[in-house]
Amino acid sequence: MAKSSKASSAAAKKLSPEALIRSFESSQQKDDLPEIYVGDTVRVGVRISEGNKERVQPYEGVVISKRHGGLNQTITVRRIFQGIGVERVFMLHSPQVASIKVERRGKVRRAKLFYLRERVGKATRVKQRFDR
Image (cartoon, rainbow, N blue to C red):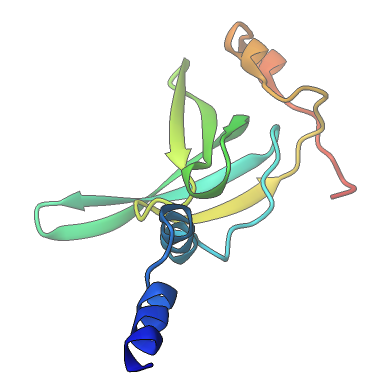
């Protein structure tokens, strides 16, 4: 009888591969992320380490796409810097992302805003949404 109780407790401690992955992902996910939608203007605080110093650099722009879900969720943020469009892809649950703040909500009717890449100047603006 002692052997069967040991075997059952060992089986209870041993997780299936799917359960093990799920438990690891849930421990790595951030809980304090705001609701981010495509079209929103966000400010992402990115951790940058220079030598032995670490600082947080803000990156502000329009979210033009969201991909994946869970631990691998990413957003693509586009901004215009010195007349040139710059896009960065951020993994939301990455330790390199210190903070995310939604500056304003955008009113769009598309899931991906890749058409903004061809637009120049004031045509790249997104209307503001007030109901969210």
